[in-house]
Length: 87
Image (cartoon, rainbow, N blue to C red; front, side, top):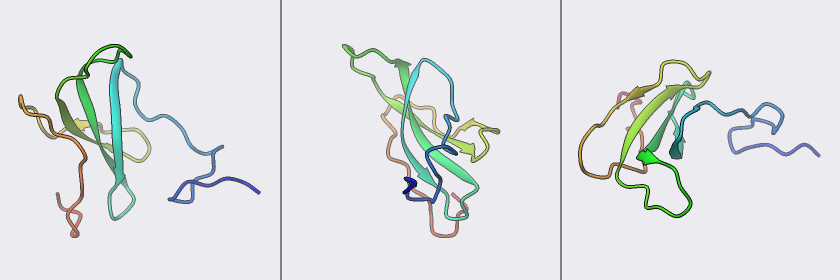
C-alpha cells in the first residue's frame, strides 16, 4: 500500500519547496490548497544553537511566489489561516 500525506500526496509526489540555510517549519495548507504558510527562523540552522525568533512566510504549492509576511523582533510562528482564506 502506498503511503500518503494528510493532503493525499504520495511520498513519490512530495518534494521540498524551499532551499536555504534557515529552519523552515510549521507548514499549514491554505483552505483552498493553493499555498502553504510556514515559519522560518531568522538565523542559520545549527543542531547546537537556538534558532532565535522566526517570521511567517507564504509560498505557492508549486514552490513559486515565496513571500515574507512578518518582519519583527518578536517570534512569529505556527501560522494559521482565516476561514475566508484572505489572511
